[in-house]
Length: 193
Length: 335
Image 1 (spheres, rainbow over the protein chains, first blue to last red):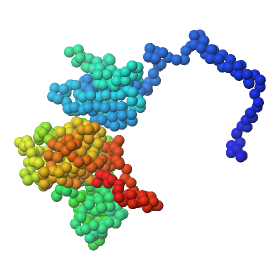
Image 2 (image 1 turned 30 degrees about the horizontal axis):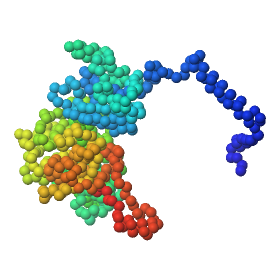
Image 3 (image 1 turned 60 degrees about the vertical axis):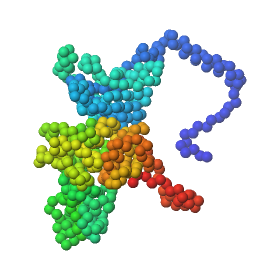
Image 4 (image 1 turned 45 degrees about the vertical axis):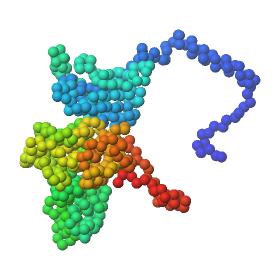
């Protein structure tokens, strides 16, 4: 059959020489490559990184561990609307909503809030669709944090205790809506009181 | 019978039919939206202006166009009438204005609202409105009124369609809630916070096109698109109640019970409060199967129905299979 592209190469199966038929030279050649790499680790720079003690540099647009943001007076922004969960392609997010009681206005921004908010970091594919879906600018993926390795699977289900960012403006994530210096100062003063 | 042309499609309807219902006999995307008109309620319609259409020719005898856009839900057809809805630029522009008007005092708290996902106003604004707002002034607010343990009233979300007032008036013998005040101060209320304790009061939840009247027993329990609608029925002791409902499941729990609605969001048959609020166990009901959800609805996400086998699609089906299908007809779904 004629070739369509005229780029086909014809292969000829030549009979093997004596050295090839003996196999041993080829085996020693392969072993030498293995040994070269074996000793190279001790002499030259290693290609592997000893994660988690060592970490590679993060890209500025890296999407890592989730954070639930607070607003400028320290109230939780999340209102448990469920849009992140419905947008999530991996179905990693679950939440239970509750009604804000009287006296909790300083804790939660809206009348409804998330009593529990869980992200399964094993399911999550860190696509950032939850961040895009959020109408309250509450959920963000941090560019500088990853879910650390653990031994148990249930330790990867992150609840609100690990997701909500600290009230202290200095300890907040660098992703998402940032406080102005005045807002940060006012908040620190409020915490100090 | 009157013959009218709606968006270039000719249709013949009985005399006295409204333009909206004539359009519904055609069906599809040309049907004008309706926020206040509700077929089962006498006298409803003509308030929200969502269904405005242009009448290009009044009738065969008098083919002059009507001077202003008319509300299609209350305007009866006349023989030879020519109506423009989606084909008229003017109608589409005016509809954008209607969305803006309805949203002026709406709090836009969809992330908090339990109606989100099955809200007529949300759909209306999404399909016909613009995505920005020009309104900067303070929105209208009300003092919160508790109207009983079963129904939650959010007056700020109300668009004053009067559907619930008609429901209470026509379905129950003693109406205790209505519209108080006038103009901007008008609100749905009950004098001295009367508790609505009528057996059919729960139907105001189903007729409300927005989240102004919602189920208090379902409040903040779950977003509607995470629940699974299932058709079910029971023999209700109440002779006026049909006992045919939709159960909204989350896992094994029935979170909410509503009446069945047609494709225009109108209740097919009313249900009583016992069925709606008190029978939240699967054992109370005979399950019929998954309720049909429109593909365009967010509730249809992860919603699976049994496949509908259509024998006519396959022209040369073997005779044995045809007989088999006749003996075991495929399950009819939803409606």
